[in-house]
Length: 203
Length: 317
Image (cartoon, rainbow over all chains, first blue to last red; front, top):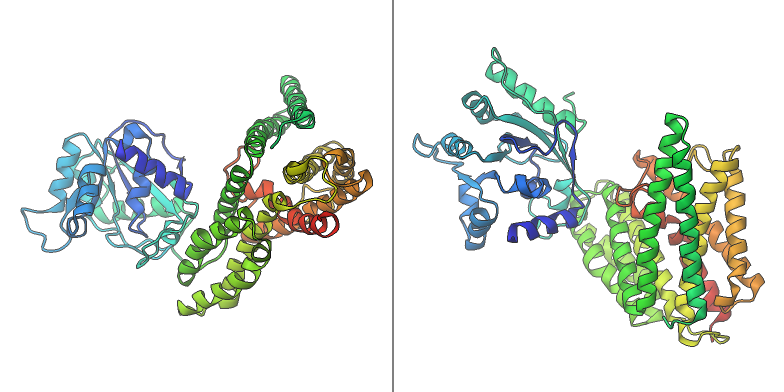
Protein backbone atom coordinates (compact mmCIF):
# COMPACT_ATOMS: atom_id res chain seq x y z
CA UNK A 1 0.00 0.00 0.00
CA UNK A 2 2.70 2.46 1.07
CA UNK A 3 4.84 1.06 -1.70
CA UNK A 4 2.11 1.73 -4.25
CA UNK A 5 1.73 5.38 -3.20
CA UNK A 6 5.47 5.89 -3.25
CA UNK A 7 5.67 4.38 -6.72
CA UNK A 8 2.84 6.62 -7.94
CA UNK A 9 4.54 9.67 -6.45
CA UNK A 10 7.86 8.85 -8.11
CA UNK A 11 6.11 8.32 -11.44
CA UNK A 12 4.20 11.61 -11.23
CA UNK A 13 7.28 13.55 -10.19
CA UNK A 14 9.50 12.29 -12.99
CA UNK A 15 6.71 11.65 -15.50
CA UNK A 16 8.50 8.30 -15.74
CA UNK A 17 7.29 6.17 -18.56
CA UNK A 18 8.14 2.53 -18.89
CA UNK A 19 8.94 1.68 -22.51
CA UNK A 20 8.80 -2.03 -23.10
CA UNK A 21 10.75 -2.17 -26.35
CA UNK A 22 12.36 -5.63 -26.28
CA UNK A 23 9.98 -7.55 -24.02
CA UNK A 24 6.67 -7.11 -22.26
CA UNK A 25 5.85 -6.75 -18.55
CA UNK A 26 5.44 -10.52 -18.17
CA UNK A 27 5.43 -12.40 -14.90
CA UNK A 28 8.62 -14.33 -15.53
CA UNK A 29 11.57 -14.53 -13.24
CA UNK A 30 14.03 -11.89 -14.37
CA UNK A 31 17.15 -9.99 -13.49
CA UNK A 32 16.79 -6.36 -14.61
CA UNK A 33 20.22 -4.79 -15.09
CA UNK A 34 20.61 -1.08 -15.77
CA UNK A 35 23.00 1.84 -16.15
CA UNK A 36 23.78 3.55 -12.86
CA UNK A 37 23.96 7.35 -12.59
CA UNK A 38 21.97 8.27 -9.48
CA UNK A 39 21.01 7.00 -6.04
CA UNK A 40 17.41 7.05 -7.20
CA UNK A 41 18.01 4.61 -10.07
CA UNK A 42 16.55 1.53 -8.45
CA UNK A 43 13.61 3.51 -7.04
CA UNK A 44 12.68 4.72 -10.51
CA UNK A 45 13.12 1.29 -12.14
CA UNK A 46 11.11 -0.31 -9.33
CA UNK A 47 8.37 2.35 -9.66
CA UNK A 48 8.22 1.92 -13.45
CA UNK A 49 7.31 -1.77 -13.10
CA UNK A 50 3.61 -2.64 -13.01
CA UNK A 51 2.33 -3.39 -9.53
CA UNK A 52 2.17 -7.17 -9.82
CA UNK A 53 5.80 -7.34 -10.98
CA UNK A 54 6.97 -4.81 -8.42
CA UNK A 55 5.72 -7.01 -5.60
CA UNK A 56 8.03 -9.82 -6.76
CA UNK A 57 11.07 -7.73 -7.68
CA UNK A 58 13.85 -6.89 -5.23
CA UNK A 59 16.61 -4.33 -5.78
CA UNK A 60 20.16 -5.10 -4.73
CA UNK A 61 21.51 -2.30 -2.51
CA UNK A 62 24.52 -1.49 -0.37
CA UNK A 63 24.23 -2.79 3.19
CA UNK A 64 26.34 -0.03 4.78
CA UNK A 65 24.31 2.83 3.22
CA UNK A 66 20.82 1.42 3.73
CA UNK A 67 21.28 0.42 7.36
CA UNK A 68 23.04 3.63 8.44
CA UNK A 69 19.80 5.39 9.51
CA UNK A 70 16.47 4.03 10.79
CA UNK A 71 14.36 5.57 7.97
CA UNK A 72 16.68 4.14 5.34
CA UNK A 73 16.48 0.74 6.94
CA UNK A 74 12.68 0.97 7.01
CA UNK A 75 12.54 1.89 3.32
CA UNK A 76 15.01 -0.80 2.33
CA UNK A 77 13.39 -3.59 4.32
CA UNK A 78 9.68 -2.81 4.34
CA UNK A 79 9.05 -0.86 1.13
CA UNK A 80 11.65 -1.97 -1.43
CA UNK A 81 12.42 -5.36 0.17
CA UNK A 82 15.98 -4.74 -0.92
CA UNK A 83 18.59 -7.48 -0.89
CA UNK A 84 21.33 -5.79 1.13
CA UNK A 85 24.86 -6.78 0.25
CA UNK A 86 28.34 -5.92 1.53
CA UNK A 87 30.48 -3.64 -0.59
CA UNK A 88 33.59 -3.88 1.57
CA UNK A 89 35.13 -6.74 3.54
CA UNK A 90 33.53 -9.38 1.40
CA UNK A 91 34.22 -12.82 2.88
CA UNK A 92 33.14 -16.29 1.96
CA UNK A 93 30.20 -16.13 4.41
CA UNK A 94 28.78 -12.76 3.30
CA UNK A 95 29.44 -13.23 -0.41
CA UNK A 96 26.86 -11.02 -2.22
CA UNK A 97 26.28 -13.72 -4.80
CA UNK A 98 24.82 -16.07 -2.19
CA UNK A 99 22.24 -13.48 -1.14
CA UNK A 100 21.22 -12.87 -4.74
CA UNK A 101 20.96 -16.56 -5.53
CA UNK A 102 18.87 -17.08 -2.39
CA UNK A 103 16.47 -14.33 -3.53
CA UNK A 104 16.22 -15.94 -6.97
CA UNK A 105 15.55 -19.31 -5.37
CA UNK A 106 12.61 -17.70 -3.53
CA UNK A 107 11.19 -16.98 -7.03
CA UNK A 108 11.80 -13.23 -6.80
CA UNK A 109 13.18 -11.10 -9.63
CA UNK A 110 16.15 -8.77 -9.06
CA UNK A 111 17.28 -5.27 -10.00
CA UNK A 112 21.06 -4.92 -10.31
CA UNK A 113 23.55 -2.29 -11.47
CA UNK A 114 26.52 -4.20 -12.84
CA UNK A 115 28.77 -1.13 -13.06
CA UNK A 116 29.10 -1.23 -9.28
CA UNK A 117 29.33 2.55 -8.82
CA UNK A 118 27.60 5.55 -10.31
CA UNK A 119 28.90 7.06 -13.54
CA UNK A 120 28.29 10.45 -15.13
CA UNK A 121 25.30 10.65 -17.48
CA UNK A 122 25.95 8.99 -20.81
CA UNK A 123 28.91 6.90 -19.70
CA UNK A 124 28.52 3.24 -18.92
CA UNK A 125 31.42 1.77 -16.97
CA UNK A 126 32.81 -1.76 -17.34
CA UNK A 127 30.52 -4.42 -15.85
CA UNK A 128 31.60 -6.30 -12.75
CA UNK A 129 31.52 -10.05 -13.07
CA UNK A 130 28.63 -10.71 -10.64
CA UNK A 131 26.02 -10.67 -13.40
CA UNK A 132 27.93 -13.38 -15.26
CA UNK A 133 28.02 -15.63 -12.23
CA UNK A 134 24.28 -15.14 -11.70
CA UNK A 135 23.64 -16.02 -15.34
CA UNK A 136 25.82 -19.11 -15.10
CA UNK A 137 24.20 -20.37 -11.91
CA UNK A 138 20.57 -19.71 -12.98
CA UNK A 139 20.27 -20.34 -16.71
CA UNK A 140 16.45 -20.28 -16.75
CA UNK A 141 16.31 -16.67 -15.56
CA UNK A 142 15.91 -13.92 -18.17
CA UNK A 143 18.43 -11.06 -18.02
CA UNK A 144 16.66 -7.89 -19.14
CA UNK A 145 18.79 -4.85 -20.08
CA UNK A 146 17.33 -1.51 -18.94
CA UNK A 147 18.24 2.07 -19.85
CA UNK A 148 17.35 4.78 -17.34
CA UNK A 149 17.37 8.17 -19.04
CA UNK A 150 17.87 11.62 -17.51
CA UNK A 151 17.71 10.59 -13.86
CA UNK A 152 21.20 11.88 -13.07
CA UNK A 153 19.86 15.39 -13.74
CA UNK A 154 17.00 14.85 -11.28
CA UNK A 155 19.35 14.19 -8.40
CA UNK A 156 23.06 14.65 -9.18
CA UNK A 157 25.67 13.35 -6.77
CA UNK A 158 25.79 15.50 -3.66
CA UNK A 159 22.37 17.18 -4.07
CA UNK A 160 19.48 16.73 -1.64
CA UNK A 161 16.43 18.17 -3.42
CA UNK A 162 15.39 16.38 -6.60
CA UNK A 163 14.35 18.38 -9.68
CA UNK A 164 11.12 17.41 -11.42
CA UNK A 165 12.48 16.47 -14.86
CA UNK A 166 11.05 13.94 -17.27
CA UNK A 167 12.72 10.53 -17.15
CA UNK A 168 12.17 7.31 -19.00
CA UNK A 169 12.91 3.66 -18.34
CA UNK A 170 13.43 1.47 -21.42
CA UNK A 171 13.33 -2.32 -21.18
CA UNK A 172 15.22 -4.22 -23.90
CA UNK A 173 15.25 -7.77 -25.23
CA UNK A 174 16.21 -10.42 -22.62
CA UNK A 175 19.66 -12.02 -22.70
CA UNK A 176 20.49 -15.62 -21.84
CA UNK A 177 24.01 -16.97 -21.33
CA UNK A 178 24.99 -19.02 -24.39
CA UNK A 179 26.48 -22.52 -24.03
CA UNK A 180 29.95 -21.63 -25.22
CA UNK A 181 29.98 -18.01 -24.07
CA UNK A 182 32.80 -17.00 -21.72
CA UNK A 183 32.75 -14.32 -19.04
CA UNK A 184 34.29 -11.47 -21.05
CA UNK A 185 31.99 -12.09 -24.01
CA UNK A 186 28.85 -12.16 -21.87
CA UNK A 187 29.78 -9.02 -19.90
CA UNK A 188 30.52 -7.25 -23.17
CA UNK A 189 27.22 -8.34 -24.70
CA UNK A 190 25.28 -7.27 -21.60
CA UNK A 191 26.95 -3.86 -21.47
CA UNK A 192 26.35 -3.26 -25.18
CA UNK A 193 22.69 -4.21 -24.75
CA UNK A 194 22.25 -1.51 -22.10
CA UNK A 195 24.17 1.09 -24.08
CA UNK A 196 22.32 0.52 -27.35
CA UNK A 197 18.99 1.06 -25.56
CA UNK A 198 20.28 4.50 -24.63
CA UNK A 199 21.66 5.12 -28.11
CA UNK A 200 25.22 5.08 -26.73
CA UNK A 201 28.25 3.43 -28.34
CA UNK A 202 31.91 3.17 -27.46
CA UNK A 203 34.08 5.39 -29.60
CA UNK B 1 -18.06 32.19 -12.66
CA UNK B 2 -21.62 33.46 -12.44
CA UNK B 3 -23.87 31.19 -14.50
CA UNK B 4 -26.17 33.12 -16.78
CA UNK B 5 -27.49 32.48 -20.27
CA UNK B 6 -24.33 33.62 -22.04
CA UNK B 7 -22.22 31.07 -20.18
CA UNK B 8 -24.57 28.25 -21.17
CA UNK B 9 -24.48 29.41 -24.78
CA UNK B 10 -20.65 29.46 -24.73
CA UNK B 11 -20.19 26.06 -23.06
CA UNK B 12 -22.92 24.61 -25.26
CA UNK B 13 -21.21 25.87 -28.44
CA UNK B 14 -17.89 24.37 -27.39
CA UNK B 15 -19.52 21.01 -26.66
CA UNK B 16 -21.41 21.25 -29.97
CA UNK B 17 -18.21 21.95 -31.93
CA UNK B 18 -16.42 19.02 -30.32
CA UNK B 19 -19.38 16.72 -30.96
CA UNK B 20 -19.34 17.65 -34.64
CA UNK B 21 -15.56 17.09 -34.75
CA UNK B 22 -16.00 13.70 -33.07
CA UNK B 23 -18.65 12.63 -35.60
CA UNK B 24 -16.49 13.76 -38.53
CA UNK B 25 -13.61 11.81 -37.01
CA UNK B 26 -15.75 8.65 -36.85
CA UNK B 27 -16.98 9.08 -40.43
CA UNK B 28 -13.42 9.56 -41.70
CA UNK B 29 -12.34 6.46 -39.78
CA UNK B 30 -15.07 4.41 -41.50
CA UNK B 31 -13.92 5.23 -45.02
CA UNK B 32 -10.15 4.96 -44.70
CA UNK B 33 -8.61 3.77 -47.94
CA UNK B 34 -4.84 3.68 -47.52
CA UNK B 35 -2.40 2.86 -44.73
CA UNK B 36 -0.95 6.38 -44.71
CA UNK B 37 -4.23 8.26 -44.39
CA UNK B 38 -5.22 5.85 -41.58
CA UNK B 39 -2.39 7.19 -39.45
CA UNK B 40 -3.45 10.80 -40.01
CA UNK B 41 -7.07 9.99 -39.10
CA UNK B 42 -6.05 8.04 -35.99
CA UNK B 43 -3.95 10.99 -34.87
CA UNK B 44 -6.87 13.32 -35.62
CA UNK B 45 -9.20 11.23 -33.47
CA UNK B 46 -6.64 11.07 -30.66
CA UNK B 47 -6.41 14.86 -30.83
CA UNK B 48 -10.19 15.25 -30.66
CA UNK B 49 -10.40 12.88 -27.68
CA UNK B 50 -7.68 14.88 -25.91
CA UNK B 51 -9.58 18.10 -26.73
CA UNK B 52 -12.60 16.78 -24.85
CA UNK B 53 -10.44 16.32 -21.76
CA UNK B 54 -8.74 19.68 -22.08
CA UNK B 55 -12.04 21.49 -22.61
CA UNK B 56 -13.70 19.76 -19.65
CA UNK B 57 -10.76 20.57 -17.37
CA UNK B 58 -10.55 24.21 -18.50
CA UNK B 59 -14.29 24.93 -18.33
CA UNK B 60 -14.63 23.19 -14.96
CA UNK B 61 -11.81 25.32 -13.54
CA UNK B 62 -13.37 28.44 -15.03
CA UNK B 63 -16.73 27.61 -13.43
CA UNK B 64 -15.17 26.96 -10.04
CA UNK B 65 -13.60 30.39 -9.81
CA UNK B 66 -10.33 32.24 -9.33
CA UNK B 67 -8.63 29.81 -6.95
CA UNK B 68 -9.07 26.86 -9.22
CA UNK B 69 -8.13 28.78 -12.39
CA UNK B 70 -4.94 30.02 -10.73
CA UNK B 71 -4.04 26.54 -9.49
CA UNK B 72 -4.74 25.05 -12.92
CA UNK B 73 -2.43 27.52 -14.66
CA UNK B 74 0.25 27.10 -11.98
CA UNK B 75 0.11 23.37 -12.67
CA UNK B 76 0.30 23.95 -16.44
CA UNK B 77 3.33 26.20 -15.87
CA UNK B 78 4.93 23.49 -13.78
CA UNK B 79 4.39 20.84 -16.46
CA UNK B 80 5.60 23.21 -19.22
CA UNK B 81 8.70 24.16 -17.26
CA UNK B 82 9.43 20.48 -16.69
CA UNK B 83 9.21 19.78 -20.41
CA UNK B 84 11.31 22.84 -21.29
CA UNK B 85 14.11 22.14 -18.81
CA UNK B 86 14.15 18.43 -19.64
CA UNK B 87 15.02 19.26 -23.26
CA UNK B 88 17.44 22.08 -22.42
CA UNK B 89 21.18 21.71 -21.95
CA UNK B 90 21.74 22.37 -18.24
CA UNK B 91 24.70 21.41 -16.08
CA UNK B 92 25.34 20.21 -12.54
CA UNK B 93 25.93 23.83 -11.46
CA UNK B 94 22.37 24.80 -12.43
CA UNK B 95 20.69 22.36 -10.06
CA UNK B 96 20.05 24.77 -7.18
CA UNK B 97 18.96 27.64 -9.46
CA UNK B 98 16.47 25.30 -11.13
CA UNK B 99 15.21 24.12 -7.77
CA UNK B 100 14.45 27.77 -6.99
CA UNK B 101 12.68 28.20 -10.32
CA UNK B 102 10.42 25.18 -9.82
CA UNK B 103 9.64 25.37 -6.12
CA UNK B 104 9.91 29.04 -5.11
CA UNK B 105 9.64 31.38 -8.09
CA UNK B 106 6.82 29.55 -9.87
CA UNK B 107 4.50 29.35 -6.83
CA UNK B 108 5.38 32.95 -5.87
CA UNK B 109 4.43 34.26 -9.33
CA UNK B 110 1.04 32.54 -9.13
CA UNK B 111 0.52 33.74 -5.59
CA UNK B 112 1.00 37.29 -6.95
CA UNK B 113 -1.61 36.55 -9.62
CA UNK B 114 -4.02 35.27 -7.03
CA UNK B 115 -3.56 38.00 -4.41
CA UNK B 116 -3.63 40.04 -6.80
CA UNK B 117 -0.60 42.31 -6.63
CA UNK B 118 -0.23 43.73 -10.12
CA UNK B 119 2.94 45.80 -9.57
CA UNK B 120 4.95 42.86 -8.23
CA UNK B 121 3.37 40.36 -10.62
CA UNK B 122 4.65 42.45 -13.55
CA UNK B 123 8.28 42.71 -12.38
CA UNK B 124 8.92 39.71 -10.14
CA UNK B 125 10.38 37.43 -12.82
CA UNK B 126 11.94 40.02 -15.18
CA UNK B 127 13.64 41.93 -12.33
CA UNK B 128 14.09 39.87 -9.19
CA UNK B 129 14.33 36.35 -10.61
CA UNK B 130 16.36 37.72 -13.54
CA UNK B 131 19.05 39.02 -11.20
CA UNK B 132 18.84 36.34 -8.53
CA UNK B 133 19.16 33.24 -10.72
CA UNK B 134 22.54 34.05 -12.35
CA UNK B 135 23.86 34.95 -8.88
CA UNK B 136 22.83 31.52 -7.63
CA UNK B 137 24.40 29.88 -10.68
CA UNK B 138 27.63 31.86 -10.31
CA UNK B 139 27.87 30.82 -6.66
CA UNK B 140 27.74 27.20 -7.80
CA UNK B 141 31.13 27.90 -9.38
CA UNK B 142 30.68 26.27 -12.77
CA UNK B 143 31.71 28.65 -15.58
CA UNK B 144 31.52 26.48 -18.69
CA UNK B 145 28.88 27.89 -21.11
CA UNK B 146 27.76 30.17 -18.28
CA UNK B 147 25.89 32.76 -20.34
CA UNK B 148 24.15 30.08 -22.39
CA UNK B 149 23.11 28.14 -19.29
CA UNK B 150 21.81 31.15 -17.46
CA UNK B 151 19.92 32.26 -20.58
CA UNK B 152 18.27 28.84 -20.74
CA UNK B 153 17.02 29.12 -17.16
CA UNK B 154 15.78 32.70 -17.72
CA UNK B 155 14.02 31.79 -20.92
CA UNK B 156 12.38 28.72 -19.49
CA UNK B 157 11.01 30.80 -16.64
CA UNK B 158 9.89 33.69 -18.85
CA UNK B 159 8.01 31.52 -21.33
CA UNK B 160 6.60 28.78 -19.12
CA UNK B 161 5.86 30.78 -15.97
CA UNK B 162 5.88 34.54 -16.57
CA UNK B 163 4.19 34.65 -19.97
CA UNK B 164 1.66 31.94 -19.17
CA UNK B 165 0.71 33.56 -15.85
CA UNK B 166 -0.71 36.50 -17.84
CA UNK B 167 -3.63 34.31 -18.89
CA UNK B 168 -5.10 33.81 -15.36
CA UNK B 169 -3.99 37.39 -14.57
CA UNK B 170 -6.90 38.51 -16.78
CA UNK B 171 -9.07 37.65 -13.78
CA UNK B 172 -7.56 40.53 -11.81
CA UNK B 173 -8.74 43.19 -14.29
CA UNK B 174 -11.69 45.44 -13.44
CA UNK B 175 -13.42 46.97 -16.43
CA UNK B 176 -15.04 50.37 -16.76
CA UNK B 177 -17.57 49.15 -19.28
CA UNK B 178 -18.35 45.81 -17.65
CA UNK B 179 -21.35 43.95 -18.97
CA UNK B 180 -21.13 41.10 -16.51
CA UNK B 181 -19.71 42.78 -13.46
CA UNK B 182 -17.31 40.51 -11.60
CA UNK B 183 -17.11 37.84 -14.29
CA UNK B 184 -15.53 39.96 -16.98
CA UNK B 185 -12.06 38.54 -16.32
CA UNK B 186 -13.21 34.90 -16.51
CA UNK B 187 -15.08 35.50 -19.75
CA UNK B 188 -12.06 37.33 -21.15
CA UNK B 189 -9.84 34.37 -20.28
CA UNK B 190 -12.33 32.14 -22.09
CA UNK B 191 -12.20 34.56 -25.06
CA UNK B 192 -8.38 34.51 -25.23
CA UNK B 193 -7.95 30.75 -24.81
CA UNK B 194 -10.80 29.96 -27.22
CA UNK B 195 -9.51 32.28 -29.96
CA UNK B 196 -5.86 31.23 -29.68
CA UNK B 197 -6.53 27.50 -29.49
CA UNK B 198 -9.19 27.69 -32.20
CA UNK B 199 -6.66 29.45 -34.39
CA UNK B 200 -4.23 26.54 -33.88
CA UNK B 201 -6.95 24.03 -34.74
CA UNK B 202 -8.19 25.98 -37.78
CA UNK B 203 -4.63 26.45 -39.06
CA UNK B 204 -4.29 22.66 -38.89
CA UNK B 205 -7.64 22.12 -40.65
CA UNK B 206 -7.06 24.74 -43.39
CA UNK B 207 -3.52 23.47 -43.83
CA UNK B 208 -4.59 19.82 -44.18
CA UNK B 209 -7.38 20.73 -46.64
CA UNK B 210 -5.80 23.44 -48.80
CA UNK B 211 -2.13 23.69 -47.74
CA UNK B 212 0.23 24.02 -50.74
CA UNK B 213 2.86 26.66 -50.06
CA UNK B 214 5.17 26.16 -47.09
CA UNK B 215 5.60 29.23 -44.93
CA UNK B 216 8.68 28.23 -42.92
CA UNK B 217 9.98 24.91 -44.27
CA UNK B 218 13.06 24.85 -42.04
CA UNK B 219 11.22 25.56 -38.77
CA UNK B 220 8.01 23.69 -39.30
CA UNK B 221 7.37 21.68 -42.46
CA UNK B 222 3.66 21.36 -41.71
CA UNK B 223 2.89 25.10 -41.62
CA UNK B 224 1.57 26.55 -44.88
CA UNK B 225 0.44 30.00 -46.07
CA UNK B 226 -3.06 28.63 -46.69
CA UNK B 227 -3.26 27.21 -43.17
CA UNK B 228 -1.84 30.37 -41.62
CA UNK B 229 -4.14 32.83 -43.41
CA UNK B 230 -7.23 30.64 -43.18
CA UNK B 231 -6.69 29.80 -39.51
CA UNK B 232 -5.75 33.26 -38.29
CA UNK B 233 -8.52 35.05 -40.23
CA UNK B 234 -11.31 32.62 -39.36
CA UNK B 235 -10.32 32.55 -35.68
CA UNK B 236 -10.25 36.36 -35.65
CA UNK B 237 -13.73 36.37 -37.18
CA UNK B 238 -14.91 34.09 -34.37
CA UNK B 239 -13.25 36.52 -31.95
CA UNK B 240 -15.19 39.44 -33.45
CA UNK B 241 -18.39 37.39 -33.17
CA UNK B 242 -17.66 36.82 -29.46
CA UNK B 243 -17.54 40.59 -28.74
CA UNK B 244 -20.63 40.29 -26.53
CA UNK B 245 -18.74 38.43 -23.77
CA UNK B 246 -15.93 41.05 -23.71
CA UNK B 247 -15.66 44.71 -22.78
CA UNK B 248 -14.79 45.40 -26.47
CA UNK B 249 -16.78 46.61 -29.46
CA UNK B 250 -17.03 44.00 -32.23
CA UNK B 251 -14.18 45.50 -34.29
CA UNK B 252 -11.99 45.83 -31.21
CA UNK B 253 -12.66 42.19 -30.33
CA UNK B 254 -11.74 41.19 -33.89
CA UNK B 255 -8.55 43.27 -33.86
CA UNK B 256 -7.41 41.91 -30.46
CA UNK B 257 -8.20 38.39 -31.65
CA UNK B 258 -6.11 39.04 -34.76
CA UNK B 259 -3.17 40.27 -32.66
CA UNK B 260 -3.48 37.29 -30.30
CA UNK B 261 -3.63 34.74 -33.13
CA UNK B 262 -0.70 36.35 -34.98
CA UNK B 263 1.38 36.24 -31.82
CA UNK B 264 0.21 32.68 -31.24
CA UNK B 265 1.39 31.69 -34.71
CA UNK B 266 4.79 33.35 -34.15
CA UNK B 267 5.05 31.67 -30.75
CA UNK B 268 4.59 28.33 -32.48
CA UNK B 269 7.42 29.20 -34.88
CA UNK B 270 9.82 30.27 -32.11
CA UNK B 271 9.11 27.16 -30.06
CA UNK B 272 9.56 25.03 -33.20
CA UNK B 273 12.99 26.57 -33.71
CA UNK B 274 13.95 25.43 -30.20
CA UNK B 275 12.56 21.95 -30.82
CA UNK B 276 14.46 21.63 -34.13
CA UNK B 277 17.66 22.66 -32.40
CA UNK B 278 17.12 20.00 -29.74
CA UNK B 279 16.31 17.44 -32.43
CA UNK B 280 12.78 16.61 -31.30
CA UNK B 281 9.34 16.89 -32.87
CA UNK B 282 7.32 17.34 -29.68
CA UNK B 283 8.03 18.72 -26.21
CA UNK B 284 6.71 15.61 -24.50
CA UNK B 285 4.14 12.84 -24.69
CA UNK B 286 1.65 13.84 -22.02
CA UNK B 287 -1.34 14.55 -24.27
CA UNK B 288 -2.22 11.75 -26.67
CA UNK B 289 -2.02 12.90 -30.30
CA UNK B 290 -0.74 16.36 -29.41
CA UNK B 291 2.66 15.72 -27.84
CA UNK B 292 3.52 17.65 -24.70
CA UNK B 293 1.76 20.39 -22.75
CA UNK B 294 4.01 22.99 -24.37
CA UNK B 295 3.00 21.85 -27.85
CA UNK B 296 -0.52 23.04 -26.98
CA UNK B 297 0.43 26.09 -24.92
CA UNK B 298 3.23 27.61 -27.03
CA UNK B 299 0.87 29.98 -28.83
CA UNK B 300 -0.91 30.99 -25.62
CA UNK B 301 2.44 31.79 -23.96
CA UNK B 302 3.15 34.40 -26.65
CA UNK B 303 -0.38 35.75 -26.97
CA UNK B 304 -1.31 36.12 -23.29
CA UNK B 305 1.09 38.89 -22.12
CA UNK B 306 0.39 41.23 -25.06
CA UNK B 307 -3.36 40.59 -24.90
CA UNK B 308 -3.29 41.23 -21.15
CA UNK B 309 -1.45 44.54 -21.44
CA UNK B 310 -3.44 45.88 -24.40
CA UNK B 311 -6.66 45.07 -22.57
CA UNK B 312 -5.41 46.53 -19.31
CA UNK B 313 -4.11 49.73 -20.94
CA UNK B 314 -7.12 50.51 -23.11
CA UNK B 315 -10.10 49.06 -21.27
CA UNK B 316 -9.64 48.96 -17.50
CA UNK B 317 -10.90 51.66 -15.19
